[in-house]
Length: 326
Image (tube, rainbow, N blue to C red):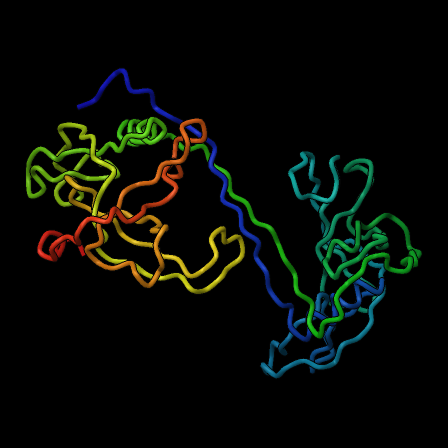
């Protein structure tokens, strides 16, 4: 079935979400200290002072409540030169990563040291924290460490922070990849942009004659190949559905609304989409629906070319016509 005329599509895909967490009572003390321009650690039962503070004693497992101040000056324990900049790093020029044991602490803190080159840093070097003017309780409230044995006084914090018992940290996380579509995916996506729904028909085996939408190149049951592309109508039947009542961040439709599996006429597997243009409590299994396409100029190489499905007003499909697709 390969068609040399089908262009294989590629695109950069990025997944982004913001990981949000509470630091809890112990690490929040560390964060509050950073906001105020000083550093704290935790003292275990054996007298070990850890920076950042730890929540439980490593030996006994007991909660740690002894929070102590340490200096913002310390000694480089070990280091590694970073020659190439990566987004999110503290500098756009080469710098050193170092483990720094602050005066008054027994453990080392990982941070950046700003020096001109690898010849300008060594194990045993004395360094001090350089503070940002606006501080929110993150480790990068310390902009970097610089050579020198004298503590640098932090200026009054210029940031406005919420008056919370525990500090909330939000970290944006993004992963980007280059995705190359298969021939079937490419034809499917081009079809959506053109207002067409393209599936594939399996030629043999246990799925012989079965039509998949979105298309597959082989049967998932036994690997039998697809033998032809099939253009399907944009009408179908609701098989199963759920009513979304809970709001969430980034939601574009006000609840309640319906997400449903739609079995297109002539296909043999339902797919998930929105059912709108009808009260959520009126959507039901067997309801006949039709695609509502976005305007031609707004269509993309994605299922977003279909805004949603709406009821057609036809009589509901008989249960036996879709029972095997639930």
